[in-house]
Length: 181
Image 1 (spheres, rainbow, N blue to C red):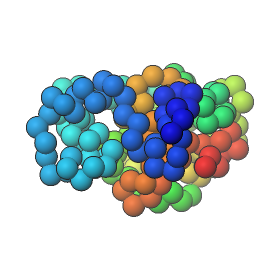
Image 2: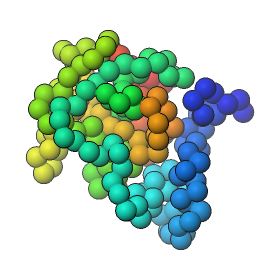
Image 3: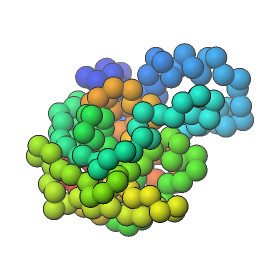
Image 4: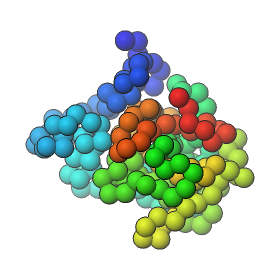
């Protein structure tokens, strides 16, 4: 299989296999759990986030979220203001989030305080929010709630494109607000 720019391998199941080296090192240090034995990236990432002493960098929300567009190996995609890839979850559709508990630890929602802002080529008219359980606001784009992947450790990194997890599929988002397949 050929390696694509950005560190992933081509093929329909390959995005589920691409784990950053730091994540792999953490996995080796953890005891094997029943969830980890299932073989899914989500199970591995949950084990990592449950055992970590600090919250993922994606989880912090202290100001209005910014959505922008960056070029990646998957083309031009939505990113947050720091350049981290944003994903949509097919199970959500155009409505409230259906990703909570273990799902939200692996796929942290893009949260905002105040109205989100568009930068660069992102379209402000497509930005919105949806209320999560507990009252926090999650950013939406064309009505789809947006998420990070906890394993994406650097800007423009896309490690879980097309990953089937938690009853849906995770896709990076085009500047027009559609899943990039």
